[in-house]
Amino acid sequence: SRSIKIAPSILAADFANFGAECRAIEAQGADWVHVDVMDGHFVPNLTFGPAMCAALRPHIKGVMDVHLMISPVDAYLEAYAKAGADVITAHVEAGPHIHRTLQAIRGLGKKAGVALNPGTPVEVVAELLDMVDMVCVMTVNPGFGGQSFIESQVAKITRLRQMIGDREVHIEIDGGITVATAPLVSKVGADVLVAGSAVFKGGSVDNPAPYGANIRAI
Ligand code: DX5
Ligand code: ZN
Image (tube, rainbow, N blue to C red; front, side, top):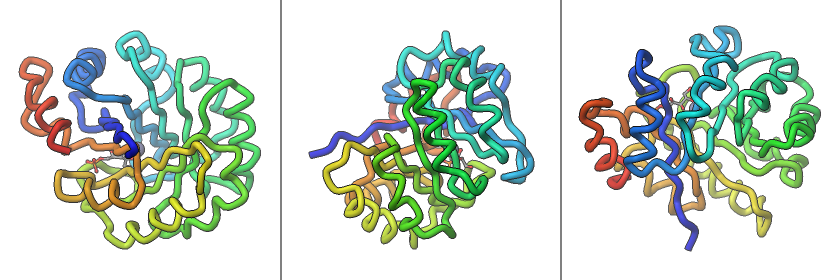
């Protein structure tokens, strides 16, 4: 059976303590660290840019998973690669040239991910599956943490699993993952689960044990 990776989203961390938060979630069993980049244009919220990713890099031993919710995206790829991202994910809705964007990410020597908003049919990735390392299915509309899981996406994940076949492509699920919703997506083939509020709730850098309990519960 496939092993499930948990990727806590630092969108739910203490913004004044990001370095310590990254160390704490890894010490508590996080597999990847998920970094949500928002531009106030592709999504209605703003977070952080490549300088923040570079500053976080020394505090993350494992995989830094950078989710770009920005448009346009191509001009910024090199900056996120230089900042030390391991996986760079761009949205298929962010422009007309997702194929070029994915070529560029791989050309920078990084793992390439393609993300889909809830309203986008999964069939749009059919021509991209041989050039990605991951497909990210958004199970909330991107922009904010703490939203409710959109159940209609489970059928989409099932179809994606079939489309991928025996390719080595991760299926990442992002948004509304909790103890209750994680089994719905792992059952149909998801193997990387992003979780923000469900991981960070009840804990802090001074009291990180709840992070570990939350990760194990998912
Ligand atoms: C939403 C982000 C998610 C978000 C997940 O735009 O891409 O990564 O932080 O947060 P939760 O787990 O709270 O839904
Ligand atoms: Zn995300």
